[in-house]
Image (cartoon, rainbow, N blue to C red; front, side):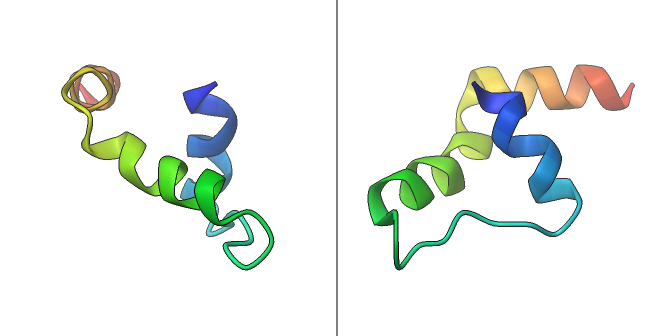
Length: 45
């Protein structure tokens, strides 16, 4: 599920926080999770 939101974020897109506030908060917090940070760092090489 993470990549489904991460890739559009890289392109400057965002979840509409006014329409989906809980989803927007979750998506915003996801990159700070240790497992996701590790995966992103590994991908960047």
